[in-house]
Length: 567
Image (cartoon, rainbow, N blue to C red; front, side, top):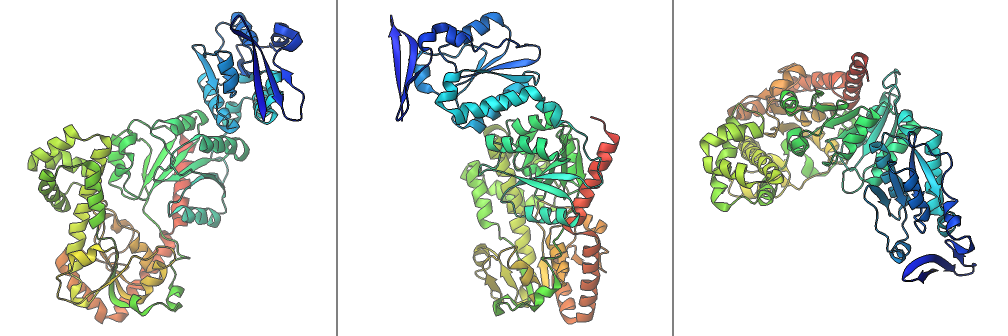
């Protein structure tokens, strides 16, 4: 343990001594006095090229002289020794950056951001030997980092030509999101080089994340950064600012509703940000919010995981059924959003009525429907939405309305299957909503997407599908996963399916609820026709709709964009 002793004259600290176990004491100035500290001042500092970084404030003598010589030069002090600063009664001068983080990597992150704001000049370390002895690991590390900055300009090195190779290199933001494994598999199938940077628990840009990013930019030189559903993007703009300065293409691949995620990111964009969304209806509406590079990209499937051979695996008898549906009842999801937006109970009836009207409305974006139709139908509700809710509460309200519309629609669709003793796989809400139903049906608790669902689909003669109201024109992943397993699916019609399948030949759709019983009855009794559709549907999926296809489409867009855009 080190012990600090301060020597005072007339109430002013004039020297500092450090005593450590099993070592001789050493002093800040000692017999050398002021000249000892003045000796650290640089002799070749050029304020047109350099940014001075004092590695330790010392007694403040050299610092004061430096400011006298270079009054206009930006200055930074790295000093984590709080007891020394307190002994000196230190107060950081206006306009000077004080970095006191004990984590050396966090200190470098702060230095890097400061360097960005000051024309990206090279860092010039002003080294106090006292601090190098005090904590060589910390101050020595920072000395080497700053010295390296003089040898090359980081920002120049970070700028390099992108998408010039036939095999681009990708940097993936790793998170717990369920599709990142599919992205990695697609990279392997396309023989692409890729690396990961790990996102912390807060799922937004933080100092360690930024440090990893900067290191990978220099060492790996990726052609693009990829994330799912905007994970890693902070609302303060730290990451987006870095993307702009690095001139690095940033691909945000949405597999959920981008409007419910990008709500708080309006104005926080970049010419290097590229948004891919599974719903074509989102393209014009996102562009209207200022996101210029937006592209339609349908969902995909992993044909290795969802494979016909899965039918050979023995499964629990409870999984086998002539008709099944896998999906959430939305009962808890709706209530959580209502709680989150603090909607008064007196407005609940209007909220539920508004959600029901959204089902049949031609408007496909929740926010537009609320502001246009809702204002006419439920003025008190929308007045509260506009005047009482903050940004987060508005988002919770829109999401809750979407989930409530899905709940009503999904329940109506599922009820049409009840003549066939269906197996419903999902949350407890199904037991609540169908408690008084006299027709037989079975319930099963939720099953895991990766480990169980690929083996579940092949054991249902008909897999039933009804799509969420967050995608009125697009289709969900089930219409790809089920055919990939060599199984049969009946789904609700969505306009964008026309571009994915030959409807009636490769997939069977219903356009209204009344059609559901007749379609189920027909295909339960016509096995050959069912198998022909399954075969053609799987062929289409393998040919056009795997995650590898989607990654390939992303890269084609990026290569074309870089071919016509010069930065």
